[in-house]
Length: 85
Ligand SMILES: [Zn+2]
Image 1: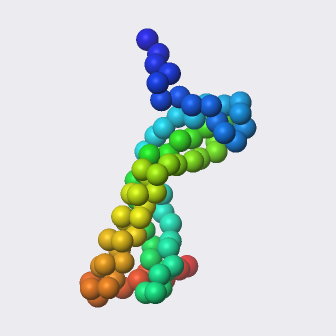
Image 2: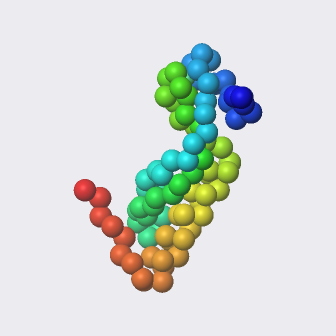
């Protein structure tokens, strides 16, 4: 039996439905220590029609936490910031 519990109408194309899945995303954040490069696994809603991705406050909190951990590592001098390219 199919459940539509975690299905939601896509807010971008209004045609598709979004399905939540865990995605590992890589991103960078500029701080006073320079750019911090992070990876985090967050719950992302992906549209099955237009492939738009969106995430909510839960994912934002996970991302913020990942940045903070990397920032602390750099502040303690345990790791060098990686260089782009
Ligand atoms: Zn869509």
